[in-house]
Each structure stands twice: as C-alpha cells, then as structure tokens.
Length: 305
Image (tube, rainbow, N blue to C red; front, side):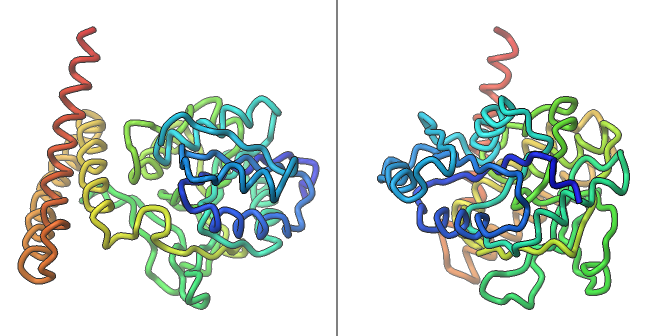
C-alpha cells in the first residue's frame, strides 16, 4: 500500500456547513494515514468559516474566497494552495458525501497498476439508498458530447478504464495537474468534469474506475439536483460552452450534438411548461441560452483586447 504518498483533499463549502462538517468527520475516519484536508469557502457569508474553525481548529486548512467562484474556480483555489505542500495526489470530493474508511487507501493503491493512470474514480452510491449506484463509471457520449453514467449492473461492479469521471469524487495524480493544468473555469457549474476528463485523455493519461472504493452521495445538495431551476440554467449554458469550445476539434460530433441539444432543449421547455407546469424551469432553458450568449460576447471582447 502506498501509505507514504501524500494526499491533499479539497472540499468546497457554500452555505451548507452542516454537510461539510459531516463530510469532514467521515474523512477523518479513513484508514489512510497521510492526508490533509483543505476547505474552500465560496463566500458563504453565513458564519460557516467561524463554525468550521471552532469545531476543527488546526485539523484542517480553510481558505476564504472573496466571491463564489463556482465548482471549478473554488476547487482550483484549493488545488493551488495544496500544491504548495507538494502532495502526490489531489482528491476532489463534494461536501455532500460520506466515505467508507478504506476508500482512499484503495484509490491510492490503484495507481500502481499502470503508470499512465492519471485519475481514479470510486463507486458512488446514493446516500439515502445505499444499495443503489449513482455513479458506476462513465463514458463520453459523442452523439450528445456529454458524460454518461454507466447503467449496466454488470459493469458498475467491475474495475475498468472509463472515459468520463464525475467531479463528485476524483483522485488526481499531481503530474496530471502539472501537465494538463487546473479545472476549466469557463463553467460555473456542470461540464467541467467532462471537459477535464477529455483533456486528461487527450494528454495521454487513463481514467480508472475502482468499484472497491465506495462513497455515498446526497445527490443534489450542491446545486439543487437535476430538477432545480439552477440546474436547468447552468447545465444549458455549460453544454453550449463546451460545444463551442471543441467545435473545431470534433467537427462531426459537435454538429450532431448541436442537433441533439436543440431537440432536447425544445422538449425540456415544453415538458416543464405544459406537463409539469413549472414556468420558471421552462424559462430556465431560455435563460441558460441567454447567459451563454452573454458569455460568448464577453469572450469575444476579451479576445480583441
């Protein structure tokens, strides 16, 4: 077991400090000895930082962000700080999770199998239904240009190489961060993990799914879940960002994906409007497109400077 390898664990907190406390207490019970915890508070302004300091004192590192940097930006703030202490691995983990005591030991040990492994992803179960798999490995859907969770019951229990790892929990080799870079910050939330999975593989690294390492996820605590207005807006915007970003690299795939995006957006709009009678979510599709167009305009202005 590579117990001499140093792991820096990055957790984002944003206005749900009780979840973060629960996550930290769970992590403090792991059987892996060489790790540190860095909590990035994404400008909660609700007493979260003070509460964390009172409870954990010097057991964790706390970084206060001057604004809500989103998922990628917040994690990158933590990664930059952690790299000062020369860790061998960086673990990104959602604050709405609970872990098995041996999950980190298993994930670290997995890197010994192949020097080209750049990231390891665990099996992620639903927190409230611990016998149900939320993430059992994932793959890139080239038709929709997005990451898809594996649904095959046989595959979710098999160690294998995958093409998409969810940002809910990823163990990243330091070498990968030095070569590939930090998480892409053009996404406030959603699709940054898909983009990073793509970049890691384009740089020659593999992503390993390790089902023996298990954590539990309170799905939706961070962003309201895939039924929230926030999710509709941000996922719509972020999907358009990634389609535009890679339009020259994967021309045929992106062309097809735009078609799927258009059809899916129309269906979502009318589903929320006519069937669910949720006007705000229906309008969230349009708002997401508008926010993307605003982002694209700002991007062009920066390119001209």
